[in-house]
Length: 324
Image (cartoon, rainbow, N blue to C red; front, side, top):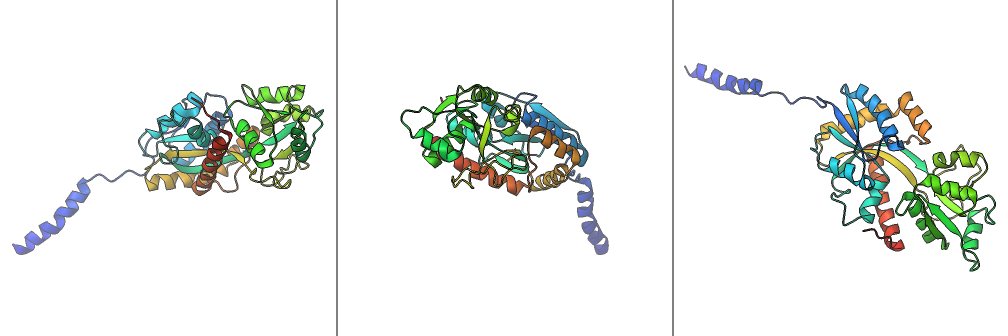
């Protein structure tokens, strides 16, 4: 009898274990990538290219949803409030680190605490362009021209608070240049007026300015990349020109809500490593004028985001940029 009781006692826990359903391996249902912008833009195109390949790696559909509005705050806030289960991700870019400093009273999430990085998707530098007919055709000459009280040298941007605006402010802070900021409704409009001579300088990406540059209507005099770009080997970096703190990359990354399980994050990061090496994604990046990062890991994205939070907070405070 005692022997029977002993057998039952040892068997009972096994029966309970068998009755408890095993935790399903991630993922067991479709994954969504939220793009906080309208369809058709670079972030949306990149997300869809990534999504197609990620679906193959995960064995589950990956659906891209656009939740645009409020300078990316609507889509970003949506993801911050979703369940941290690995099934809702955010396609983030540079405004992710700029918006909290510009709209501190309006942001309904904590960009630093409410998200965890998954993968760095791509990077792209910004160029400082001038009009070919302008007297200053180098960075030192441009800085010197702004010190002449008889000159009013203007620099255009894609709008107040945009990355191109903050690059102009960063340039002024690091060189002592005194430029008049002219905001436009988009970087393309700024580049067009630069070509027409209405303004003298402007920061923008090469994809935005490619047609005007190739036509010789605007001239790049410096690039914010760590090294010279192979497509513009004659354009020096700001570091070469001894302009400090101007090595800045525009970036795109994949984020998950904070608290996402470690196994889901590990599965996503491993899948994205393969995705980023695929020919289809490499071609998609080239078509957008975006460079594949040397390191696409979550750690690489975390480092870039942390650096940008500090950089843009400082620039915005020093330039006293305030939005309601």
